Image (cartoon, rainbow, N blue to C red; front, side, top):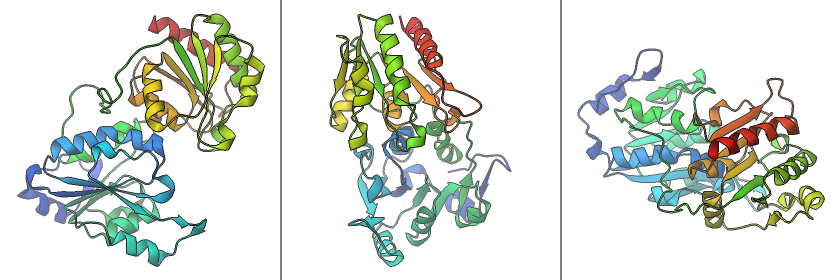
Length: 337
């Protein structure tokens, strides 16, 4: 394998050049991927995992994550899941406990750290792979990795993680693939889905705005079912959003579904309108059109450059107005006709 990058765009140690010089992708038999993140972030690494399986066809892939983020791991694209307990019975685990679990990882040819946290760094060091690949935007950690690449807030996250593979000689042709075409085949229905939750409260558009939006769009599109999707947490029942519009015959409240059920439901939907959350990433992965409501962070890292995806975002980081999201939905529906 030959490393492909320009100076200052990435870094590779002499050890990396020497190790890869006489290696072919077929020679790689064991790979560790570190991803300590929620379900939406697991969606974002699916194109990376598909590329990994394609480029290293003989490799067994172990995903290392933490017990607080083990929901929704991409089991169909990996061979094993390794879990580090961050907490047990509500109490933080000790460094010794975590280190003992790290040492249970298989001896790998390559390790990809897609997390860049203190725990992922410890995992990279003490699992002792032959080559460690990570991000270099934290200078203090750059020297712990044999190969490192930059990460940008202006590059789609699903594409950014692929840069690690591009450096090794992998090339991709065409659009990003998530591997869900056969798992969740599309059966289009006339439904617009709304999800008002997020991993943090400061990412949640206000409930009165969501309710007002649904009221307007259900009037504008009376032949569509307008579905308020409930989440898995107790604070994701969204009754305060549903109650003001509950008398509308084309507005329903959809109870919590299994992960597989949500994926198929989103795949069948005409449009999803949601906060910056995992549900939106799931819809993107099933090629369902989306409108993301952003105000806590800029959206560029999570905004695919496709006409079927839009984001509503104010540069002053204030919550968008109802009319802003409504107009985005009108434009999207016109495009999708």
